Image 1 (tube, one colour):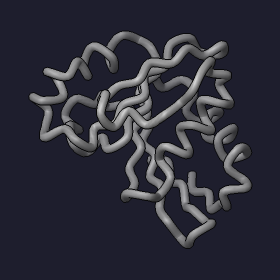
Image 2 (cartoon, one colour):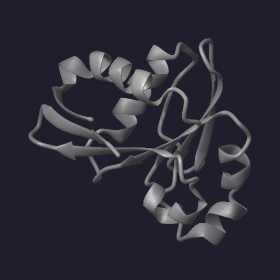
Image 3 (cartoon, one colour):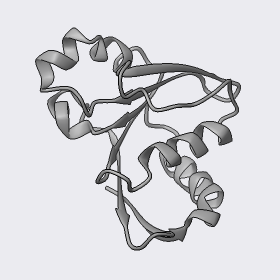
Length: 136
């Protein structure tokens, strides 16, 4: 699936993406810095009726949210990790293999920890207002 969209169309794209990937427990977001991974995840969490604030877990590595739709969601930001060993030491395995939804930014930092059936999303910047989303 490939979708080209503007930021004003984010809510619609989030709904489509959820319908495509809702049976996957691990979602991996591949994109360059500034492409909108956190923005997309924030919109997805809004769609899934998360209570409280959604923010990037850049320093915490993992944020936990409560959703009225899917229960617990773990939002990971692996940008600062230096590899799989550091990810394991940070408790990443516990969060991705507990049966709850995990949304992972920068999954390439510890890709060996991902399951084969991980829902992989690639976001590409087309211009200031337009993105391309591809699901692998």
